[in-house]
Every structure is written in C-alpha cells, then in structure tokens.
Length: 372
Image (tube, rainbow, N blue to C red; front, side):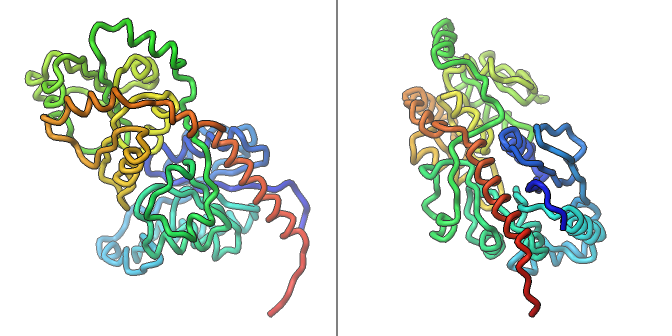
C-alpha cells in the first residue's frame, strides 16, 4: 500500500440544500484532501480549497417498484430498504466500489442510516453528523453505534433532554456555524430599525418549505396591522385580492440579508440553517416547526424556547395569538447567541475530522495483520 496524505470522504444527503451548505462550511476549514459523494446534487457547484472531486451515485428514490416500496421498512435497523429497486442495487455497488478504489481514511456521513451501515460493513471508519429530533429508533441507534464519533452542529447547551446518554458520550459538540456570516453588525442593524416609522416583520421561507401558508399570513398581518409584513421566498396566490395592504410578498431572494437586518422580528421555519443564520445575526425571531421526519423541527423549536434563544412554536398560531407573540419576541434578549457562536463550529468540525483521519491513516499503515 502506497503511503499518502490522509483522505476524507463526505457523503452528503440530497434532501434540502442545508446539508450541502454545512459540508462546504467545513470544507472551507479542512486542510486535508477531501471528496464528496452525493446523489442528485453532485452536479452543482461545490467549493472547498482541498476538494479533489465530487462523485455522483444513483439515488435510492428513483424508479422504486410499487410492490417493492411495500417492503421499504421491513428492517428495523434500516430506515429505507425497498425490494427489487435497480437504482439501489447500482447505488450500493457504486458506493462500495468508490470506497474500495479510494480507501478514504474516514467518511463523514451527513446523513443516512443506510450509508452509515454500508460504510461500516465496508470496514471504513466514519463520523456521523447528528440532527435534532426524536432519533431513538433502531436505525438511528445502529448508525450511532457504527460511528467512530458523532458531530452535533450545535453546542451542548442546545442538546435535547431526550437524547440517550451513549449518544451524548460519543458526540463532539460544535459552536454555531452557518452559510451566511456577513449580515450587518448589531449596531448598524439597530440603526436601520430606528429609522423605520413602523415595525417590519419579515417572514422567511427556504426552498424546502412545505404547505400553503397564505391564509396564515393574511390572518397574521391583519392581527398586527401596526406593522409591515414582508414575505421572502413566496409569491402571492390567486386570492391576492384578500391580501391586506400591510402584507407584501417579495418572492425568492438570493440574498435576504438586507431584509433581515431591517426586521424588528423574523418569522421562519425551525430548520437548522435558518435558525443558525438568524442566530448569528442576533435576530429576534419566531421559529415555526414544519412537518419533518423524527419530529426534527418540533424538537428544535422546543429547545429554542427552553433556552430563550427564540420563540419556538410546534404549529402555526391562531390569529388571536399573533399580537402577543410579536410583543414577546421583541422583548427577547438576543445576546445569548454570542455564546453559541463564541468559536467557529466549522473549524472545530474540521479539526476533529482531521484528527480522526490521521488516526485512521496511521493505524491502517501500521499493517499489523491477523488471519482468523
């Protein structure tokens, strides 16, 4: 075996761009050569100073037989294992072939219980990225057991009360990090707000948002008529004649920073990237949980409320609650977010990944072998 510099592999899940943004934040801090393995999103532009290649493998959701899907959850240690699905057969072959040909010293799995188990079966050490949510099912626990260590993209203060002890013990907690780190300073933001004659409430939706919320938004704006409501990420619908005059749909915004900096209150989903970007900007915000597997956003919303970092809601409020919610949010102290972002979590993640990669590389190169 030829000695070489340690090599890091990243498996990146294709559901939502948040996984890609998180990986790129870590790649920007990583000093070792790295590869990315992904489905569907592998053709996008990827950035990282040591990124050597991006490899595409088949997607396990493509062309699934109806009868095969009926068996997708037969195995408790796997979240998703339908039968007779050619794309999955090819996906497994592509992934394990890449592992065999490249021998990464560590794989960072973000996220997939199936890829995690496949990586361990292929005898490659891995680090599994954690997410909030109720993840005490057999598949998650097996993936955590198979990992060398776990990375939590949040500090220990944001840990969930329901997390098992062994998961906490394997977890490396990170300070906050996010894609957008350039929102205006707190002093400039306060100056912008003081110039406005009326409060501005910005409602921010990402590309992953689900459900029709137009009626919720009309009711909210009507309930708080003394504020201007601006909706980012959505256009008005066919009932636009019912939209109150203080509600404006700005559509998709590639750079929402200016709107956020001017907002008195931001309303968003409880998705990880939205929460961290608003927290980094020290915004006062309301996080409304969207329906996600394993109660991911519900649990995060509860943690945000517990820590008084934001107002976390598990569902859209009724119209009569909005006025009180806005007042409560405006009274929040955003300064605790400074502790969350005290250090660069992406740099901390890169340091841990590098340590594990070097340990794995040195152990592999020792060539102490036994035949059973």
